[in-house]
Length: 258
Image (cartoon, rainbow, N blue to C red; front, side):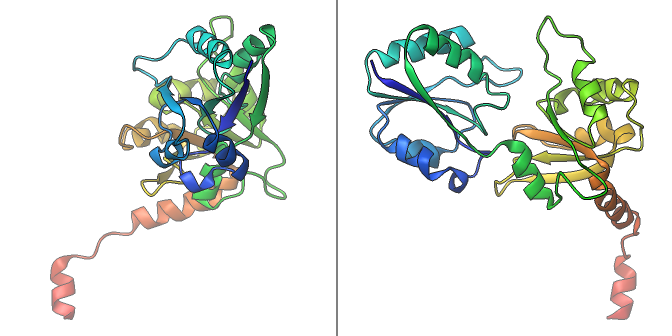
């Protein structure tokens, strides 16, 4: 029986992959990977069979039970099986379901941490998620809930934290904003939208909760997007609003000065 490695690929940029993850990929026999894993990361597993088992919102996705079964069956055939996940396996990565399936079949496994998207978003913004006097707590949450969970459960957790990072929610920005306000978050609360953090195509914008649905619609589709909420963003939001309120100089004025 082989060994299964649950490996975090990081937020997107291939050079944020850990050294341990790279070493395991180099000797992998088979790699089952999430959607949006960078091709350069997959190229490290040059000896391996590469199998896409990604999940994307609004698109055809691989059933989790099928992935569990694939891992168990692969461990019976290969020495080194890699389940390659975006970000960190233990943060919204369905890792526990896979770990439980492997344990139930007596299969040895190891978890290799990765840089989760919340940390990449903070780096992209150049704003700390914690700050003395402004933020002593951080919540990572997702509005995507199971059938047995109350709709407002995630919102209550986000509202209670000094800083909140929301995964997989920007596509339902209007509903998200409404639920957060019902949980007590004021409409003037600062929000940052960060797309494709760590990649050259990264985009970011600042807004307030009341304007979130309109500003979220300005983001192009495709890249993974997170929302950051908290007073740590207040200064950046004020500076961004000031820049956008400065009227553009008229071409005629520039010509006359020339």
